Length: 323
Ligand SMILES: NC(=O)c1ccc[n+]([C@@H]2O[C@H](COP(=O)([O-])OP(=O)(O)OC[C@H]3O[C@@H](n4cnc5c(N)ncnc54)[C@H](OP(=O)(O)O)[C@@H]3O)[C@@H](O)[C@H]2O)c1
Image 1 (cartoon, rainbow, N blue to C red):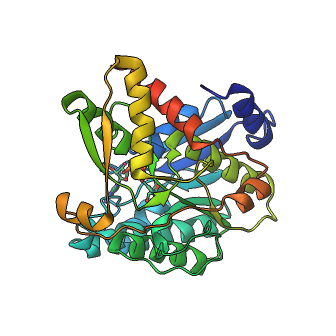
Image 2 (tube, rainbow, N blue to C red; image 1 turned 135 degrees about the vertical axis):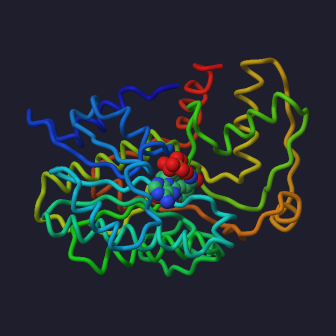
């Protein structure tokens, strides 16, 4: 179910095919988004140089981070794809989470400002308290309910405090179908092999985001910022679109694809957030309503975001390819 016409139109609009290949530095190499960015560089006619943990541990002190940022090669734009994403661990490891998610983005932002190049940074729906009922706009009041969200919000503020031209893209429920990743879809598919029934939280609603679609959106954002030097950027929401779904509903859609492929039908039992908190020994509370309103991103960057069912079908195809 690859929406090829749609994808081509997005590429045509956003990669800014000028004939000159632009060079983008990506902070992060092994994560879902970083790998999706690297995989899509050719299609977007750009050169990407990615830096991973072995090049610089982002939990290092600010001086080390500044030295690393200063040593980055000459480039036309920078995307921060790495982050401390272990949401439960962050509750007990707040200093590391804050250093990686809160301090390091500010250091890269200052470096970008000094070089006069644009920055794209990825943030999260978890900066919101998640107690609303209507899709969240970038201007809605923040109020993270866990340490991970607080650390990501600190990163947004550090970037905003610098003099950089930046697009901060808040996203939600990121996953892909590639072999190295750990994510909800792959966990569900792993369980589907072993069990006939899965137990999944049903009172947290959001919209899943295929990392490939997030990568395309990030490249659209950096593309516009590289080509329009007067465009200052801002905070935007980027997720797959379509009718919002609970984690349990998302699991049922994954299981429907699994049943079609294997003939095995796996049911999904609903539980609520309190039950999940106990059952899965979670440490961080998750927002109950995480639906991001992507309108301002799609309008500003002239970039249509695919529906989450399309994103899921594509991730499932990617997963099937290495089974
Ligand atoms: N995943 C989600 O559901 C989700 C939801 C909302 C927002 N986001 C945001 O989306 C962005 C992309 O997330 P993702 O799903 O691609 O993340 P991911 O797959 O979990 O990858 C995180 C990356 O960050 C790197 N990293 C973590 N700590 C580091 C450190 N101290 N020094 C250097 N590198 C470090 C990891 O390197 P190693 O491989 O070496 O550990 C990995 O490459 C992040 O900003 C994240 O906060 C994600």
